[in-house]
View 1: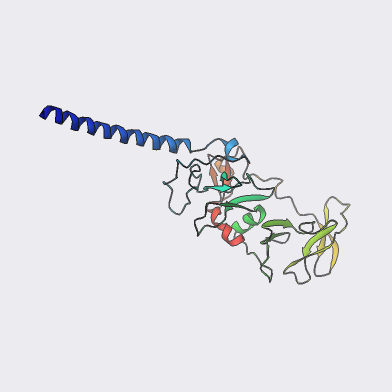
View 2 (view 1 turned 90 degrees about the horizontal axis):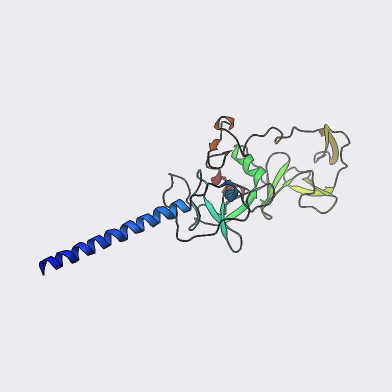
Length: 256
């Protein structure tokens, strides 16, 4: 009888160990399955299905965890929900957003897991540390001389182009220089090295020297970079194969 009792206890003990090891194996497998390194998947506009069997728990200090069911964050950029039905997308990339936009968290302080598309030009402008003037009504935020972010439309526009105006119109700074207005579009310059701009102080179109194209020799955020090619304020990601600005995810609250 005593032998049978000892055998039963040993069997139950081994059974509990087997359950624990199986559960641990499943956790490791789940975490491994949610570590995405395939660039085609990461940059895809189709997104990655949500798997609520996985939740990221191990993150570095001051970094943000991915939304429940989404893959493990990459270089401090979490995966968030976007779309209807929602799927997982990596923040800091264009992915499901339109041209010249990046995906970021909608709200950081409220621990939101939803993504929102924001202006790429203004995001990078803000990350540079430059001031961002705001129109008196708070609607428009100026990202340098030639770009503006519309907080109502949640989109960015190039000034001296149609922007949010009607056909054959230009979106330009108004006479005060602190907001924007729509005017009849200026004629296109016939000189390759010149560009037509609207001077809000003079209230007329003027011919100016064409500024250099910042993307002409751009070597950031593209495939095939090396760590030595990143600017001093950026880091190289061996997963994303590109340079990125650390903690850029936290700039969204100021823009929107």
